[in-house]
Length: 423
Ligand code: GDP
Ligand code: IMO
Ligand code: MG
Picture 1 (cartoon, rainbow, N blue to C red):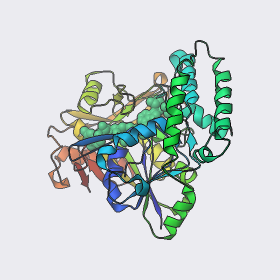
Picture 2 (picture 1 turned 180 degrees about the horizontal axis):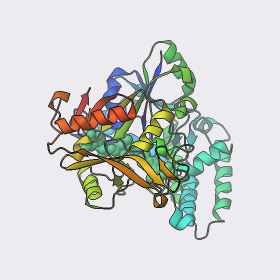
Picture 3 (picture 1 turned 90 degrees about the vertical axis):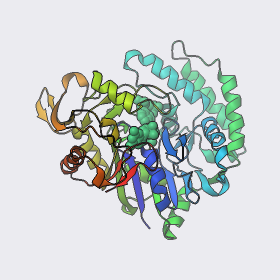
Picture 4 (picture 1 turned 180 degrees about the vertical axis):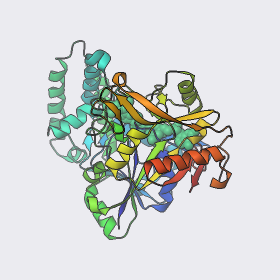
């Protein structure tokens, strides 16, 4: 059996959590393959609103197994908080949640290093979520990391102390870096490690191979977005993992020829949280309206998200890199009431007009070139079928589909599970 893949095509927060939740009824297994608690995936259903960080977004469905893959980095403290928050739902985690032995652990000192590194960058800081993501992936590729499987080893404490000691030595190089709270952080961490041991920790790649052999349907859930990919994103203003399709292969042990559908998800406009280039960013009333109506605040940090028009140059790039087969457009409802809708189709650069993503897209020397479409007044949030769509909204979808040369199969018109329309 093949594996389908869902990932964000912009700078994250496209609505991945909502759509994974919607699609879960068609899958047996939902598997996260990269990122960690920097992610915030929001689900809304039956009057409940829930934000997940490490746990896959299929957890609320009665049958699906949710797997945290080897490519994910886990902060046991945040993980256990997520588990506690799920208590009202009476979920049987023994049957429904699996964790890869090969997933790496975020230590308290990884978080301290993240904070120290950001502080040292001053104005050029990344705008990290400060969850320790960068330092943990650095230790992984530097071959110093600690994996979930290590917490069962007899020399686990020794490993932990050795790496912590190393981090504290590195911290000394950062002016003003503090390790005062380490004792408290450490206590919380070690308690959470004890709790983590009681979960189902597995050889996740073997589990997935067997599941494929048994004909199970698997959906891989991406975190962040393609423009935050460590290779193809707006480097260095990116996260430290492979957020694009290839990340599902390395983050789960799924072979490339086993991936079938690649669902690419995008907002009808663009947002970004944290620093870094964003050519179509709006600093005017239109941007403020998108932020207000779209309730654009980070699900993990609560920071305001920067807002702007849709950027087709960036979107086409993301579609190519990922081999997207189907698109899903989110938050069209937020654009109701704009008399004109703008879409960036090319950039004016020092080298002339460019319709592909340049090496360096710092906003200063790039001007977006726009096409303008007619807006619509109607509220979309109560609609349930495509034939109820206002003409100008349909025209917007048709325009995008042609420009992107990829079908838009799902249109989302509100945060709730029910506000999802198939085309
Ligand atoms: P993720 O990180 O990709 O899962 O996305 P987030 O949860 O961080 O951010 C998406 C936000 O938009 C959440 O607050 C969702 O509840 C909300 N949302 C998702 N789809 C829609 C939609 O179609 N319309 C509106 N208005 N909100 C949506
Ligand atoms: P989801 O899965 C939006 C951004 C941060 C920062 C940069 C690096 O909810 O879409 P990091 O903490 O990874 O070192 O931060 O990446 N970022 C996200 N932005 N959505 C996310 O996840 C993000 N995860 C990280 O704001 O700019
Ligand atoms: Mg999010």
